[in-house]
Image (cartoon, rainbow, N blue to C red; front, side, top):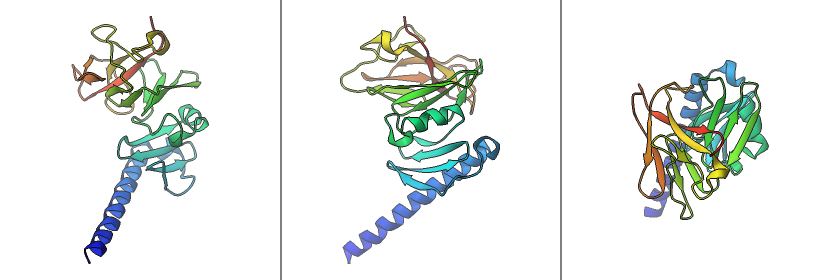
Length: 210
């Protein structure tokens, strides 16, 4: 009897988890809009430990570790070419964010995709760095290194290869001009700290290194 009850509980918890993911995907689709994502291209499915629903112009990806985020436009094409959620980038941890100059960035668990104003998208996989929207954690004994009080090296062991990161205000789908602080968090992470932003801060990729 105890085993049967446990099994029923397990099935219920799985159902509840799937239902929550579906609701989150529906909410994200409504927030981003059908004009941007297009019509659904198939049913929602389980993939790589999370849930995915594809659309004509993009996809919505949901996992416990990364949350629920939409990838669309040129970044979506680049993401698909790298294996999407099953590839080295993993699940997205932000939506496609637009910078003040019209370029875009999308952060993933293990890297990022940058889009220029002309629509070209480039990707960078960072095996030793794990992103969340407002932090980067390093593995394999790598420790964060600050370039200045507002910038940190993305690849501390080889700065010339990885450029730097800062923090920017991020209300929703765009990165505002504002002031955020960035600092080390423990011995293996860097984290954005809210400065004068109305809401939170997000990791901002700065191309190139010096």
